[in-house]
Image (cartoon, rainbow, N blue to C red; front, side, top):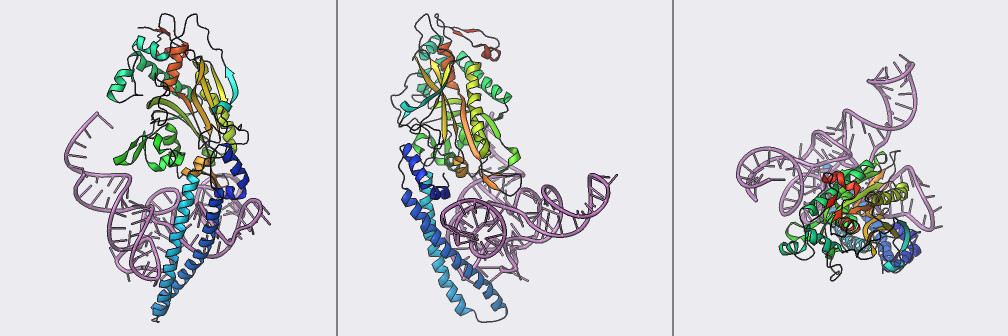
Length: 423
RNA sequence: GGAGUGGUGGCCGAGCUAGGCCGAAGGCGCUCGCCUGCUAAGCGAGUAUACGGCUUUUAAACCGUAUCGAGGGUUCGAAUCCCUCCCACUCCGCCA
């Protein structure tokens, strides 16, 4: 959520940046509502003030045995007016909040302006795509030959886009999760294992609700949602809190299963593990003081990249343009890993700073060392990494002509020293 | 799921069955100052958040309003009375 005071003072900037995203928003309507709200509140506060004073007076007069019937009747009428005003105020505030909740974040100044993913900007490249002496297979073929992923039976017990990992597939996935968590822990990320089901407040806090309800699996009778990313549970762990400055930055890594309905992506990536309703991810989450968030974003990105370097998987990093960036984000880097079968890079991580946008929604604040000032914190997060897609990258990049997989060096300790996965 | 008890400021804890003097006693903690050879003790002051008054800049001070789990109701007036919900704890039942 954006700060209404900021919007008032910088309406032109807000307009432009919202337009750069390709989003529409009725700024004039919002400002008009706010002006109305202020006026009405000032008036009503005055009425309440008088009522409070007179009410005390009534108490005193009654104790002294005086007549209060007339003054009481007058206050009753004043009370009716106050109630009416409060009701109107409530309606205005609800409307404003609804608007603000549907207004996306403003991108940072250095974010390139562009209309969609075609205008994202290359930030860096690491490693060289490997040359194969044979035609590299797609991961679904490799996996089915090795009998380590069972797409059909996953679908049988749930529906399409659900997969069962079998044998070495399951072990490989688990090894990747452990490698990621251990590697991040070494860099000072504290591991968290948090609920997969959260309430609507949490979803609102990080920006999934109200706008993206369609993307969420919901447990209707319990009013809980399955998390689409651990970002939701981990960030909201701190909702409503005022954190002492000296406890920042908070850095967490968290493994979770993630659940996404993938509404509107029918026909896209239907084969294989790329787009699943349920997938595993190790997420990095940070809460920082405002002045530290830029540096922390750079560090976050490097931590995510570090996993790919550790696994020796070629990748590139893109800076998302204003038209492709996520709703709550102020700046996002996507990391894309090389997939030989597709002869292209595919997204495997998304690292973002939300500045104070999520913090304002979730009310995550910090108290400065002087003990006085309270302000909104900054939140950041990034995948470190999407585990299923990492498994895809390992299978494709480390495949051999005979259909076997060479286990990346870094992963061997996690698989009892195993060097090759074969049928 | 059944029965019961309870949710008050950073924490503990009064007040809630006589509704007004309660944004809330007291204690602890913390901050600043004083005092002290150092430490400890002691003394004094302060110590919630949001919104509004403030408007074309920022901050402080001051004033007002709201908040005693959340929402609603009764009342001139509610931490105190009534209703609904949420949460925690205890016992029983059930279950990884």
